[in-house]
Amino acid sequence: MSANNITAHSAGGYNFYTLNSGGKSFVIGGVPEQYAGEYIKTATECDAVILLTSKPEFTGGMDALLDIKPDIEVYGSPAALRNIKEIVNRAVNERLIKDGMEDHGICFHVTPGLDWVDTVMAVCNGVLFSGQAFSSEAEGAKEYYNRYLAVNSGFVLSALDRLADEDISFIYPFRGEAQAPEAAFAAYRILAEAPERSSPRAVIIYSSKYGYTKALAERAAASLGAAYKTKVFDADICSAAEAADAINAAKVFAVGTRTINRNAPQSIWDIITRIDTVNKRGMPYFVFGSFGWAGDGIKLIDKTLAAMGLRRAAKPVEVLFKPTQEDLDKIDKEVKELMK
Ligand SMILES: Cc1cc2nc3c(=O)[nH]c(=O)nc-3n(C[C@H](O)[C@H](O)[C@H](O)COP(=O)(O)O)c2cc1C
Image (cartoon, rainbow, N blue to C red; front, side, top):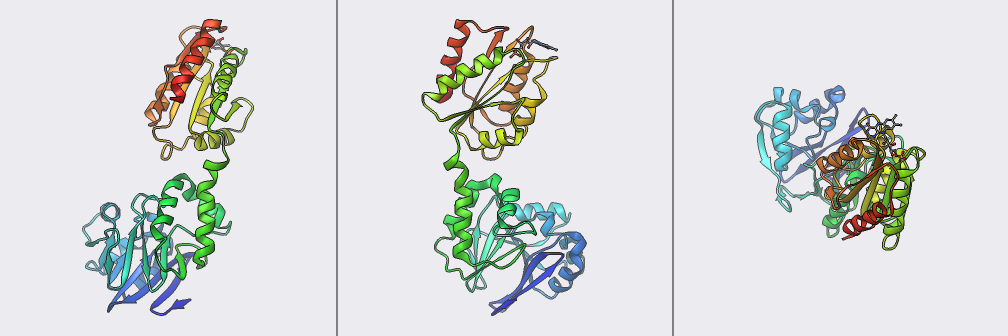
């Protein structure tokens, strides 16, 4: 594949590109260390490396390249330059990429979070060098998106907006075939917007052996359901991944947990540990449960969610064994706080 001044190379299924522009030769993209031979041979012929990210999966040839050509220019975002120096453990001949910057006919866009925080994209002669975005492995573009980028769907939408005014004829990604921009952009917009559109706005998960925590969960559902589309998951029956997906797409959530042997049950942890702490940072939550002696499970879940960066929007409701009417009223009161 070759477009004007651009040549595509591939090693082990990883694409990298050489580009001659404005009298300077660049290599864009990279490979894991085990495929570095071909990359290094090509890159040593170039004046500069453009790092679309510092992620080791795509910079596995940098260390050896710098051994051979220590003065080669290295273009990257501030984060990518910081990271790469810690990955190759040496100084590099750095060229800082700023958003909107043009250099030798290449226009740079800072598009963080795809999937590392340091990612940028480059456009030259109508070709978008997109990094992991618009990539695919054997399993397909949608699966690649879900595996690597879905966690940062907000960043994906920002990148699409950022690129909207660019005149792009082809997309050259890190993995898989070159893409036509219209179809690829439209597909990514649908993927990135989908979870928000189709999901309930409130989610309750609970674990209850004797039905006491379940009674609290049902009351919370009735209370939340008045204002939010609400989905309830019994943690001991449901798929943990499905419940976590629902939380990750919701606006607020509540956790009802019994306490067993000074802990919350494994089924609750299985869901909690799948919460998307990147995108759900600051998401309001509320914890409740029935307990017998100290209620450590409720406290542990409450503290853990706070430590994960979610927002405790309501006071935990801890109920000794069977809930009274007063306990159920407390649930109503705290759910109101959750919805504020
Ligand atoms: C095996 C077992 C261990 C328990 N360990 C604790 C504990 O460490 N701390 C506590 O406060 N309650 C403990 N409990 C009490 C339960 O949390 C309590 O019965 C609670 O009401 C159960 O709520 P549920 O009806 O929603 O299952 C334990 C109960 C069982 C059966």
